[in-house]
Amino acid sequence: MPDLLRQIQLDLKSWAIAAKEKGWLNERDIQAIDATTTATPGALFDQANRPLVIGFFGGTGVGKSTLMNRFAGEDVAHASAERPTSREITLYVHESVSVTKLPDEFPVQRMRTQRHQNNQYRSVLWIDMPDFDSVEQSNRELVELWMPHIDVIIYVVSPDRYRDDHGWRLLLEHGTEHAWVFVINHWDRGDERQRDDFRTMLNSAGLDNPHLFVTDSSESNNSQSGHNPTNLDQGNLNQGNLNQISKTTDEFSALRETINQLADQQLIEQLESRGVVQRINRIREVTDSLRAKMSTPEQLQQLNPLWQSSWQTSTIELTETVDWKVPGIAKLYAEQEQGLLGSLYAKIRGRETPIDSASATIQSALENLLDDTFYDRVNESVDTFSQQATGTGIAFAAINHPIKHARPEWRNRARTHMQAAIEQSIATPGTPLQRLMHRVLGWLCWLLPLAAMGWIGFRVINVFRLGANDPAAYLSSSFAVHSLLLLGLAWLVPTSLYVKLKPSREKAAARGIRQGVIKITQYIDEQIQTILQQLGVDQQQRVNELDSIMTTGVQIDEHALPEALQRMLIQEPPAVPVIGVRATTQS
Image (cartoon, rainbow, N blue to C red; front, side, top):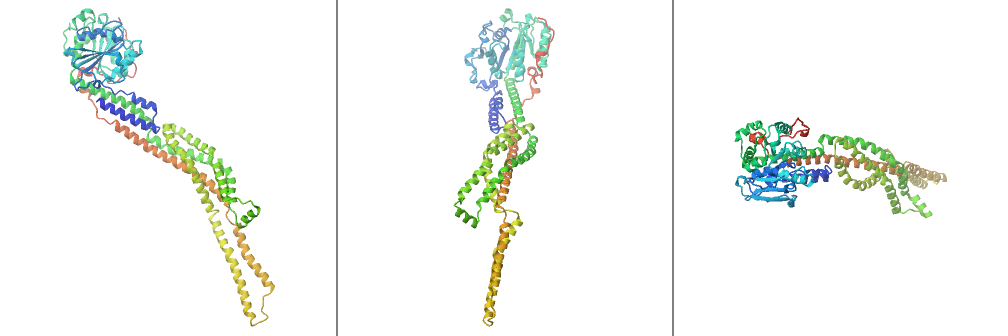
């Protein structure tokens, strides 16, 4: 059983660390898992049939030591204001029992073990714990360390100290993990109304019919080592007749008989199993809080519409931010294109710009376009969305973590998208109709001059043929002038239109730059949508892993436990502190 609890805790911690790396959880969540108690009394022993672990618990001066001596039948615990157990843990164990698995965090220098040979208590390990209400903080820390390793707590009070709230606070915190037996010691100074008042407080703590004994720790009773003056049997104990005993009755023998019955190995195993179930329930309480931090599919479904609305506005703002830089960069692409005449003119003037130099200038201009200010605005828009997403119940880190890892790639891909958009736009400048007309005019620039030359050549050859028979057939100077004019017009008109109607490279570059900005925003949009989709897949996977870890068949039927044992168990701790219950008492 302890191995099961420890394995569950280790698996949960591994799961939580992985969830923390993804931003779902934080360091405090991992610490909450570490704080879950997986220790059980059985973890202290090697043997299968381990002893019943009983702890004496109470405030200063309530008589725990004298009560321990009555159980032992000898003076094993020193009853004084400076007794050793006021500062340390003392274990009383049979010489045949070996306590071998003390946790590493136990301060062994503040713990001592006393062995006895009383076979009556071979199956019981007694723990005399420090006074929990001591001024020493270390005493309370010792009590906290040992609490998970105890099966039964004998909670000892006195008539004048039973309302002290220190023990009740600890009772409410660990109440469901232990069996409880209550003793009002020094009953020779008590009153029945105090017993009734104490029982009312126990009822408020979740014990409907608690085992409540009164004992007299006077010297005469101590010397008797617990002889029972009332000769009560267990049947009377189970019927609750102890509640009618007068204040002068010493019920130590009934208390001892109850403890002896609990030392039965079957009951020890039942207590161990119940303790494991309670600890698993505590772990489930922690995992339920962790599950809540993992969000729900419904919450994750709200992210995509929220992102679309936010990014649509951001896209418009980003486009407007860089639009004023576009004309200047587009001119650089127009200057890079030089025709034959322009190139000859540049050479004559000695001002030809090398292609590499022009490309470097364009690259520098594009980097100025996609500068830190541009990406700062992108990051600001994405961060705003991440903050808005927390309103749906999603952890900020869970969204920000994958986005943070994606941001460096945005810069690299942005340059690629921008360059591709510009090249595509320049490769297809203007509209489809403009490109068609420009292509047709390019053909006409060659076809019309060739047609004119063909017509002129036909006339020349024809006149030359006629001139062989008719001396009057000749070509005048007017024909030459007209031929030249026809040839010039056949070339000049389509060429002029071809140049005039050529799609603007500058405009194409400007269009490409704007399309590049849009492609960059679309790429970021696709990346965020992919992240949100993966976020839902990751959330479902981690919830399934958590359910798999917490799937355990450890159960125990509370109603199948013996009636006497059921009376010692707190099923559900109260919602309000029991110290608020007040009644009239008389010391």
